Length: 174
Image (tube, rainbow, N blue to C red; front, side, top):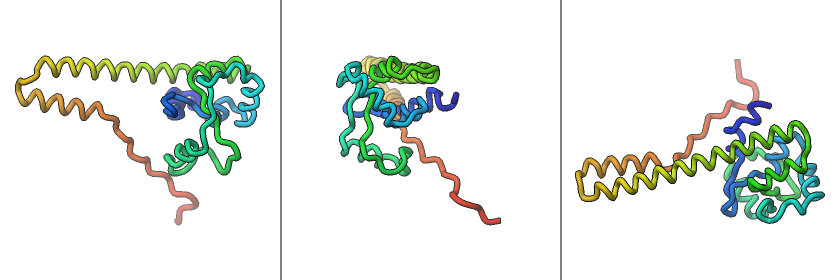
């Protein structure tokens, strides 16, 4: 349960869709320990608590695109319905719909993950602004300083993590 609620585990389940940081109903259901249809039913029974900026359903194209980004889908086989996307406010509202000890713990962990993401984005923006200001101050100076700034900019670019090797499936020969 603790590894399931770690901030890193939850951060990997926050996606940027339609310009919003969201979590999918499939992932939320897994965290809450319920089936996705149960989570969606609870939301639909309380739909007045979930305006469009709290919750929206992915289009078939968005769902297909998201699934194609993963070599092996962690969302299982065929699904009749595309999942719902919950913004941070929608996830917070889930705490008023799902009332269990586990739901409380899950919501706390998810809110911490969203806060950590906001802090990281803010820190990155601050660093970029300070770097830009410093560059303006040393404009026209030494070429070594220019190469230092270029190196810092390269370090600030997002890095794609290499795929981890997967263990072989099946039995190994002796």
